[in-house]
Amino acid sequence: MTSLVTTAGDASFLDALSAGDSPLHRLDPRAKLLTTLAFAAAIASFPKTAVLPLLPFALFPVALAAAGGVPFGYLARRLLLILPFAILVGAFNPLLDRAPIPLGPFSVAGGWISFLSILLRFVLTVSGAIVLVAVTGIHGLCGALEKLGVPRALVTQLLVLYRYLFVLLDEAGRMDRARALRSFGRRRLGISAAGPFLGTLLVRTWGRAERIHLAMLSRGFDGSFRFDRPLRFGLASALFTAGWLVLFALFRSVDVPLALGAFLVAGGR
Amino acid sequence: MHMADALVSPVVGGTMWAASAATVAVSSRRVQQGTDDRRVPLMGVLGAFVFAAQMINFQLPGTGSSGHLGGALLLAILLGPHAAFLVVVSILAIQALLFGDGGLLALGCNAFNMGFFPAFVAYPLVYRPLAPAGATSARRLVGAIAAAEVGLVLGAFGVVFETTLSGISDLPFRPFLTAMVPIHLAIGLVEGAVTAGVLTFVLKTRPDVVDPASSPAPTTTSRLGAAFLAAALLVGGVLSWFASTKPDGLEWSIAKVTGRAAPVEPDAARAATSLAGIGGGLATLALVSATGWALRRRR
Image 1 (cartoon, rainbow over the protein chains, first blue to last red):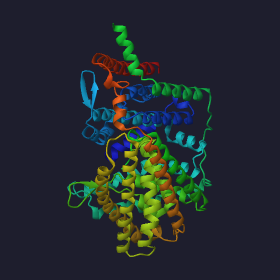
Image 2 (spheres, one colour; image 1 turned 30 degrees about the vertical axis):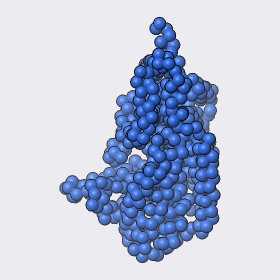
Image 3 (cartoon, each protein chain N blue to C red; image 1 turned 120 degrees about the vertical axis):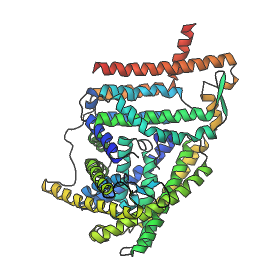
Image 4 (cartoon, chains in turn green, brown; image 1 turned 135 degrees about the horizontal axis):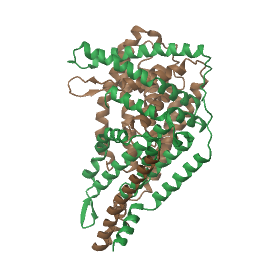
C-alpha cells in the first residue's frame, strides 16, 4: 500500500469530483450502481483467454469519465498504482499454461493470452469502480443501497465510516510523523511498539466516538440518518441503464473488434 | 488477501455474494435489535480506525520486511461478531470503491474470507474459549495468536478455493494452497501478537473499552457453528456442481483466442483472422478514445 498521505489525497480528490454537477451526476445513483455491477459481471463472464472481445467495454469507463469530468491523467495514475498487483497475480499464467496457441504465422503460450486478459480485466473493473464513485459519491451510493433494500445498519455504518475515514487517516498520519521525528527517521516502528502505538490510536478513537455520540444526541439523533434529497428514477436514468445494458449484451455476444477488423480487411481488398 | 474482480467468475462471485448478503442480513438484525445507539458512531469510527491502522507499517523482527494489522479479530473482540462483520464489510466496500483493492463482484468473496472467518469462527470458537473475560495477558496472547491463525488460514483457503474454481488464473489448487498456508501462518503470528499488544495497552489505559460487560458473551456459539457448517456445505456443494459442468480449460482457450476452432483452419485463413483481430482491436480502441474525446469536448 502506498503512504498514508497519498492514499488520503487520492481518495479526497475522488470525493471532490463526486461533488461536481453534470447530467451524469444528476442521474439516480441506483442506475449508475446497477449498471456498473452489470459491467463487472459481463467482463467476469468472459472465458479466461478473452482479450479482443473485452476491448469494447473500455467505452463504459471512458465515456463516463469524459462526461463526468474525471481527468484521464488521474484515472491513469490510479491504475498504475494497481498495476504491480495485477502483474503479480497474473504472472503465474505464462509460467503454468505453456500450451501453444496459434496467432497468425506465430504461436504463443496460452498463458500469455490469459495474462493479457487478466491485466485488461483489472484495468476495466478498477476504472469502472473509480468512475462510479467519481460521478455518484459515497453518499449517493449509500442512498441507493438503502433504497435497494440493504439493511439500515450497514448503510449507516458505511456513512459513518466514510465520514470519519479521512479524520482517522489524518490522525494516524500525524502520530506516525511524530514517531518518525522522535526517532530521527532512523528507526522504524517495531513490532513491540506497534501494540501501544495502535492502542493509543484506538483509545483516542474510542474517545472520539463518545464525543461524536454526545454531539449527535444533542442534535436529536434517533438511531437513523436521513437523506437530504429523495431519489427519483426518472426517464434519463432509465435510458442510461437500458442503453448500457443493451451495449453490454451486444459486446458480450458479438466479438466487435473481430467483426470490425474483418470489415476493414474486406474493405481494403 | 483481497480477491480482485479480474480473477472472479460470475458464478463464484454471485454465490459468495449470496452467502455474505445472508450474513449481513442476520448481523444487521442483531445489531439493530440492540438498544444502545452509542454503537452507531462507535462502529463507524472503529471502522475508520482499522482502515488507518492497516496503513501503519511496522518492522518485523529478523526480516527486512514489514507488516500491518488486519484488524478483523480485534473488531470481533471489541464489538462482538455481528457488529464486527458489518464493519469489515463496510471497510471492504470502501476499499473496493475508492482504492481499487478488491472489487464490486469480489466483495462477497472478500467479506467471507476476511470477515466471516475471523468474526464467526475464529473469535467465538477459538479466542473466547482460550481467553475468556478476565484472562491473564499470557492467555490473551495465546488466544489471539491461535484465533488469528485459524481466521487467516481459513481465509487463505477461501482465496485458493474461489480463485481455482473461478478458473481465470491458472494457479492449480494444491500448489497454490501449499504456498498460501505457510505465508498466512506467519502473518497470523504477527496479527495475533499485535492484536494482543493493542488489547493489553487498552486494558491498562481504558479498561472499560474491553470490559466484558459492554460486549456480551456469545451465547449462540453452537448455533453459529452449525450455521457455518451449513453455509460451507451449501457453498461447496453449489460451487462444485458448477465447476464440474465447466469445459476443460485448454479446449476452451484454443477455441476462443483467435476465432472459432482456430487449429483446423488453413494457414492463410488463420493469418487473415489474426490480422482482422489485431486491426479490429486497434480500431475499437480508436473508436473508444474518439468517443471519450468527443464527450469531453461537448462539456
